[in-house]
Image (cartoon, rainbow, N blue to C red; front, side, top):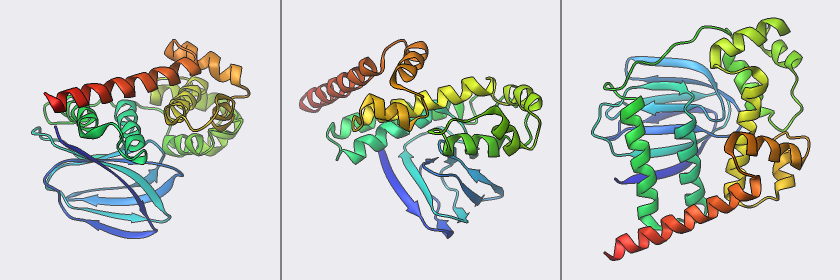
Length: 264
């Protein structure tokens, strides 16, 4: 399964993208930006938030209009399934694979073509299972009207000491209202959602291996290293140092297996 990863930084303005012969997964990366996008007969306007995902089916041209600079991880993936159009969805698994592929690209592809292809296969299988005409319909949740703005605020301020009061102000509702409607919208209480996103961001930094654990704690909004360690262990079952070690082992194992496959 062939796969290609790209990273683009697009300035404010209009970008015309011709139709591709394969589906493309676009993962927004960095600060939130207001985007208007048209793909065939469909269009969508809204904030592109860190971790948001657009899925562009094969054969569909796209027109993007950004009010500010937009950064995006692009995954070109082979798939025989009929992939459906998606605007600014959240899919933690696709986000994780995209981050892994970007990390591989940033390191100069040290693990070889087969490593990237194995990740591409995971993405293709996931697209077929979750984002194709053959997959089960999406479950729509009710809840918070300004959910996009709240999620954008969280993603842009993970390193800060967020409060329920300021998130309620972003949503334009009372504290008691956001507590109820946020949970209805995303399936988690606000504080648990924020902690999960901080752990997700910490996992990315742990995998990159460029920062100390104490610095990662500060970058992801944990008050101290032990606070990060507690939540990583609670959600992942291992300490941050063990998580980083496992990432290194997995990368080495996949690289060795890929080399063996290439020789066989």
